[in-house]
Amino acid sequence: MSEPKPQASPVRPAPPGPPPRGWYLDPKLAPRERWWTGTEWSDFTHRKASRVLFGPDYQRAFWPGPNRSATRSWIFTLVTIGFYAVAFITGAFANPGTGSQPSVWPWVIVCVAGALGVATGSSSIVSGVRATRLTATSGGTGLAVVGIFVGFMGGMFGLFFVAFGVVAILGTTGRL
Image: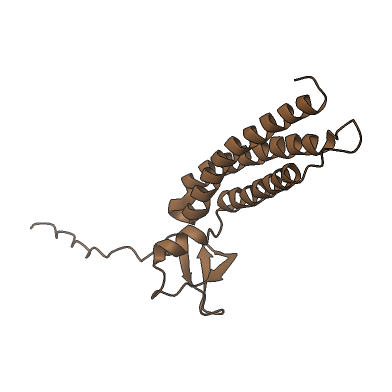
């Protein structure tokens, strides 16, 4: 007599796991989307952009969600622009002073604002580069690219403001 062969059990597919990380419609706050980390819902939400006007790439580019580096890059960009506005306005309206001795302080302000602009512009570049590594899963490509571009251009403008301010200081004090 032969031994009975064990019957092979039918192979069942594994039950589906949780959805991958990404933006999903928030059931409680429609029409908003909430970030799913892969294991739980985060506190990050944003308005869902109109599909008629903007595609999903726009949403991921300018709604960075948990990509804090993209948001940080954007903040550094705004601060950099603020420093350059101070430098430009101060330089444009610099009073040559009264009497025989012109004032040096407006040009000192131009130099300091330019140097601070270089520092924040550099920080914008660093944050932007870090953010581009996270954009595939967290969004924020647009903010990261803007941060890198403005940071680079800001560095150039900052160096110009510092050089211009130093030349103006030297000219004002008679050392040039």
